[in-house]
Image (spheres, rainbow, N blue to C red):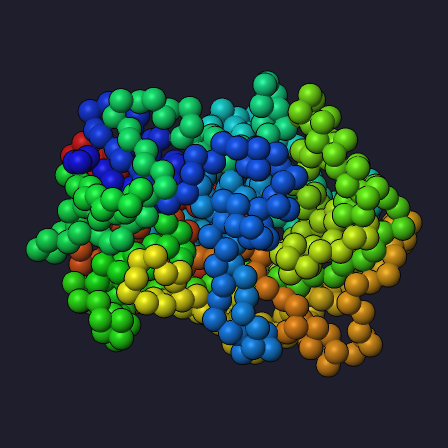
Length: 536
């Protein structure tokens, strides 16, 4: 089979690319996804994120694990990643945040020419279909539906009040003129019509509505083994689907959109990457590119959980499960209520200390107990507050565990490998403790799940014992113009013609917030770039 564009990965970036590139009826597009269609009830019902994120069983989830982390007492971390059309937007908490405008100016300063805030904002707006309508900062008619939560819990509003009592201002729009403050998150969710209350994944927004286009072929349950390279040019991919090996050829370009773990793994399997890594696994070197798999960055998350004295939260006891069942039936008829909740209903962007130019910490407030990615269950009603350092200093790597394409990649986030991150995490945890002790939360505040003696030594030990990812890995195919950059500012793989990487792996550094909206923005901007280049 031969197509103009072959896209590997049907996640947040791949869904956008396939839809936008196939708008031109003169080109043919093939999108290849390892998972399924991403249309079932687990994806559509927002509350069922709790069933998917744990990876037990792995519903639409790659359920990766990291190497043992010295900074986390030798523990192996867990890395949920979406495995379906829509990718991680099919299993995330649907929170719509972009980060701070200065994050993108930093990208440009680091060599990503044309990726400053002024250049990126139009593509955020192009993607966004916000219920508030369009303005200078928001899009009102884009395919990605962005909505207010229909029925946030009272405790979520009490958390915002607790932040105000802790001198953190209220903020009703984290993507507005000011990021700092506490408020309810907007979510990627349908607000009207027959799909009201359902998740709006990138696939639901962009891809599912156009699957019947004659110039678009979508292959699900297909695992790409490597990129085919001839005389320094990517010519297609080799994949396995339903026990058959299939060769897909690309007339114009092969585009990797397999994410911060999948894209560097595919480059390495194709012989593109650090020579020592390739030789270790006896992969023939097609092109030495030392930055492939380097620069892994992720938001490390620390959680404080409490049992709740009130039952208007999520619990796995008989009464709580009965409430969830009733909420499920209500959601099917109205699209509202607990089943429409992202669970992480409220949050805040705050500064770890006065005088900083922008927030450096983010809080997610969850209306249930979350312990070890829902892999350790608690029957009690409760709530959890998560806090992460937005711009960590620690860096990690992604490599090969073996040359077998069916093997998971080797993921080493290097959490807390830079001592500056622990100093920030301690300040973050103290700030979170102060907020959770504020009086507005007193009617709900029961026993803390993991109490400690209050000393810095005990707090540091708890951070190392329980912290893990909040699911924002980026940077492993970094954009830039130096020797360690993997792609240039047009997202072309350096040294290989006809090959690009377009996903979160190209980010030079983490944005100060959740990463799904920025990934969709990258794909929107890249799609226009590709179409413009094809016309010249």
